[in-house]
Length: 428
Ligand SMILES: [Zn+2]
Image (cartoon, rainbow, N blue to C red; front, side, top):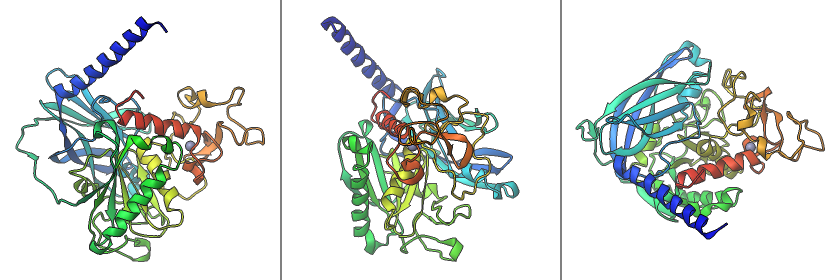
């Protein structure tokens, strides 16, 4: 390459970088606007309503990558500058409520669940919009659109409980790093030392697993020493209830190993003063179980023999929007994927629009779909079965962390690295 071309490229890159940063400074402050809202409804409809706005003191997310172009998630938040109507921030996410909508219970009951989103704190009036994806056509539809004045007295600016914050690994400025926060659940005051050791063990193990081993320096890792009254978590199917800070429990939707909490408000309250791109709720229990929802949170137990793999698997869901690649285990969902459309997750396909998935990662002459024969079974392919369904959904490899705790397949690895770049304000 000629030196003039290199100079031009360097100039162009600096210009783009500076421009993106300037945009953040035009519209936002380095603080967080947190919006707690309910989603309510049943299997036939859903609505959204505001619960509260909060101003919180840090912003750990990107300052250049303000518009999310992944298209992942069952929900999206769009933020517009009110004066110019310009889209200035967007992000996709999943919720536990969305999963509940596809259970049998949602055919007979109407419920309301709290959810929470965060965005950089606006300097001027904004219009924010919450959209939900309709599984009937996979398109987003607006649930709620509302103006927010950042100087409003109705935004709560109060401090919350100052929990002990442990810096497990600090590699740089939060806008240029992924800020992963472990939150203690079911650890009493006397067990806080155990939490610290558990969180450090989890962080260390994450960075031994490809592709995370290649990007350890892109992560800041924090621990929040939230204190629970009692040790452990609920096992409602066996009549065991514990008084814990985040109200977690097994038997979500009646499935014994499905460990979650509906109490996202308490999670957000725990991380109010920590820069945060991703939350892992670390539960002081030893029974197998966990859960993870894209850009919402992931959760798992500290002391099961498969704990570290469960952690990385669930983190795959919450961090990179990865789908489950298994198809033979019991789940509580009905029609979780509409086979007439391409699912949004990067690691499964219905072959409706496979070109946008991992086609470029296949060895040449790989048949689509790919037979599970000696010749192909250890390579990247398009193997039938995935997303809880044995027929009509395809996965990128026979084995993967998202199926059976094998190493991540090439499609999952790429999706993880893209998300790391996005959150570190790099090109993705
Ligand atoms: Zn995979």
